[in-house]
Image (tube, rainbow, N blue to C red):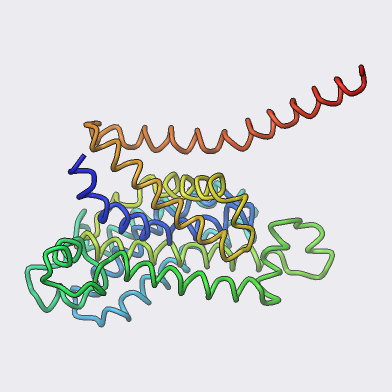
Length: 318
């Protein structure tokens, strides 16, 4: 039990970082109604671009900006394959993800892992987040405002505010209209292909930003760190929707629910690990969690329909 409690700050920190990626998944999955598998590759692209630039002496903020741009370009490729080449969205994402594996290896100079030398105090202190900061704040050797939960929490709130503003603009409303009813949006003069490409770019930019933050947190970029990212993203989206759909109706709050969903997901994972589950079963556990939460809305609606039907039949016979 104590091991679980001690691991909670780290689990919440990771949940917040993955929550930014989940918000990116929300944009394609819920707003654009596109199943985008690019994220498994673009997550690592953001991490690789950041680590290579940062360890090469580039300013941290410029390295993070480069990671965001790299993710947006990955989304652009998927968007062009889908809209210009007529390839189904899910296949476009798979093709881009496949190509990104080689690109990510090239970025990391054909190394499977590139580490940030956090043994150098100057290099460590410049990072926004780090697993070491969790322990340092707990030990009192680092100020509380450097805690990853606080830093990533503020980061997330700022992103949600920006996205809330953007999706309230004419362009943002066009993206939402495209996902809601593509034919109707096109009839209103909206360039739906442009909106799809822009949505995919925005989504993967957020995913890459999340990858850059996780690379800082773990002090390394690893070629397989994005594998299964889409599952974690979907889990966060679905958990947030199932848990908070009744109380979070505002668009900004829905984005917040996605972030909270990622935190809940990681707390559940940490709890299961604390009970002694072999870490090699984590992928299976993730798949089971996503399957359960995806099924809940379906079974809930089916139960409600059955209840309404039974009530009507009773009323008719009465």
